[in-house]
Image (cartoon, rainbow, N blue to C red):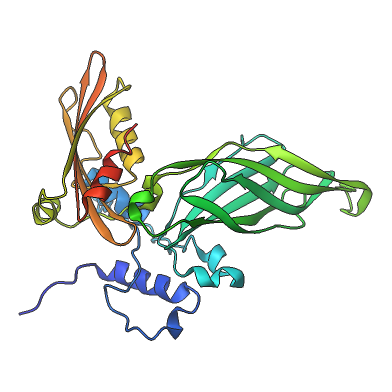
Length: 341
């Protein structure tokens, strides 16, 4: 007899590619096992299928004609931009990367977005800076992070971008280092941010320099590093079995009043607060007017499985959330439950 693989072959392939993409990974002496391979988050298609119960496979149309499913896009490692920088090689392998977070309005002179790359003891902030002014080139571009109010993180390095011309988008980086290795310290922190750069006046037709250069500062929105940034969206194949396997030893139970009048908004907000993956099709609401039960799954920093059951009811005063969080450590269950706000 044989036991089935704990992950499917598609995820195994992506995990192996992620392992090999990290700097110096192939030089390590440790053998490659399932436990040493990196966690890979579900793709957008996998997230949709787990949340809605719809696998997206359609064989025929209304008149019976065969439909050819679109070819899957090859997933791109979001940490590739970090791995390409030799100075960051010592940080190790990224646990996960966030979606881009806008720090400006999309119509401003300088447009900035940030991707948060989570490493074992660091968070690398990748700032994507776009210049929309024809008469300017931006040199020595950095984002200054104010870490004075954080008890968990301190700025330990940065890398500037140069030569951002009109219509260009380039990356600059800032590295946050965590004080200590206590996972319980991964609570939310908010940082004031400011874009700093040298403005070079250029001829908009030729791009040649003309006029003076001057230093400029440009205020950005605050950036939050939240507990959910350390949660990888990974569905479990059998939620009930996983729930029972974790047991209630480290379970945290909470009840919250939320300011939502619509079930769809409340469900989306709870999933977003926790940064977890909806399972068993519970991301879709099939019984309007009745309480809704969410099954949520994720892998927390350090490889800890986290599961949650969240019941949401809409009342006259708003939404009422009852949530149970289970994990392998009570402090992790508590941190996850405290993500609700």
